[in-house]
Image (tube, rainbow, N blue to C red; front, side):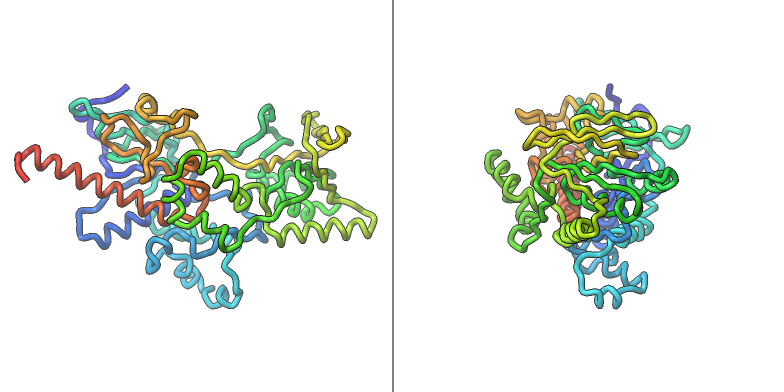
Length: 445
């Protein structure tokens, strides 16, 4: 279904953002700074977020966990080091700048970085509608071309519409569970961890099974081991042990802004090789300090003869059965085939995330989006989905571009630079469109 450009009056924005996580928050800041300094007519924007307030992985805001990226890779610094929205300015506003300097670290607490995000979001809250879930996008036609996108959002019982010249999709990540696993009261993804701990405490939990070998899995195991001193925590993973994240200086160049250009220009075989080479910078990798801490706990318990932290390495769960009052987990050794049956109060899957597919929201527009031979969206260097020529408006992705732009696409490392590139693309394309209209009217240049 599509509409004619004149069929109804709705608010028209240069940019409408779907979702207001860190990526679209960074874009809102970039827009605010551009409008304040460019001397040109402002780029108008509005963002729609289904959460009632800003929130970022709240279920994993463990108060002892630290960020895995430098504070300098905040929402703005790599794009504009003088920005008032920087993490350093946040520290100054909170009265902790000197304390942080004395702390001698590049890696803030995760809860602190979340507070920084919320602090920044409050500064641009005039361009976001919280509690608004986007339910549909429809193309708006003029002279046979898609010039605008009508975005329909539900807020409570009300439905509102915005018209966009450009749509920026920042729909975030979705928890990933293995095929055949159904989430429930006692089977859940680690993204729900802190929301579940209180109810587990009320039940006097005696055993947990944690599936996964990455940073989140290790953090979940450590937290449950701390929070439930009478419970057994069984960590299940296919490796021999937790593997350290490769955060060495040269390996971290995969996150450099220049690396995006190199990755984008590379052939598919080279892209695949680079992802394999540097997967340990992010996937199924754990901070070495946490690995050492878990090993110390394991060894100490062996000495004391009371082993609460049990590692089922080189193993996999082959059956998870919710029995109502407990979950029966059958774990099989990959080496011997031997099976262990664990009756647990809960099974926690720390099995990562997948980018949310934005195309179901796009309706008939999805048919105009081009895909590669593997069915993945084709994406231009400026993060714009490749569409058929009749689509004049821009459909931009924040996330879901790992196959085209590299490993940094789903991480915070390149966010500030990426939003600057998206904004530049939007501004330049609007200038081209304005020139085209002027030429059509005057017939001369």
